[in-house]
Length: 309
Image (cartoon, rainbow, N blue to C red; front, side, top):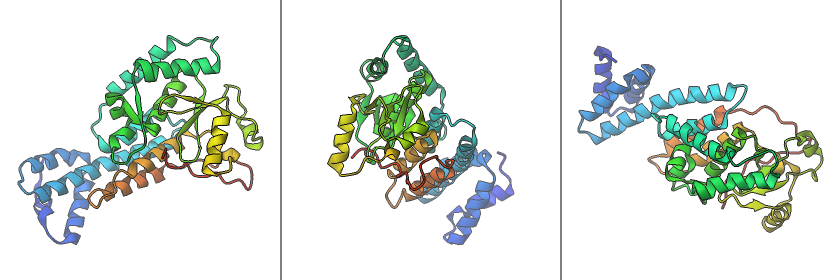
């Protein structure tokens, strides 16, 4: 953007110690939109004040955030909320200039390798074993407990780059591939875990709400791809002393999954210096609004709990 007298004056006022002046100046700079970012980057390169550089970095971040917020609104309002697109939006909070082509190429490579091993004669367990074997053995994806000191383990671009993600990120990648391959795996609301479940393609989700015994075929731990039985899950509920109500086994929408990813990712920014990012991520999560569900009257669906302990 060509620098005019107003932009020059605004830039000179960035070091004003008056907070009200800075707020007014920063708001006006943000009003210029992303086109002013090259001017800010040039100013950053030509100033020796670390304080001014930090202010410029925050302004650039806010400019990117405004665009990202608009894209999250558009994603939320789409007829179908694509899970990969949602995961990339979260990545762009940290990497606003993220080139997505490489992510799509990696996903397609994985999809094709799995597709070559699938056929219509495989049982549900065999289908999942193929997907798991390619992802965790051939591709060497590793799982990690959710640790808020490792923000990169929440982000799909870094996960594919390092082949390491936490339970939420690995679960999302597993779900993306399952959807692309028509393998009916969904995320469910098990307390303190991010767990996947295999539902047969003709599964009647309305019946599930009313009939607790009408369940998924089996469950999958996205940390490793290990399969769990109903007995394993029942024992887990006994261990944590929580009654296994039907809403815990209800598949989560893509909206709720991305909302949860934003909420959990926000916990990585819990210092005085970064807490503004935590609030921004929470605000992004609040943009995502789910349609009312069809749970039975009087049954409250528990919130998606924090990931694995």
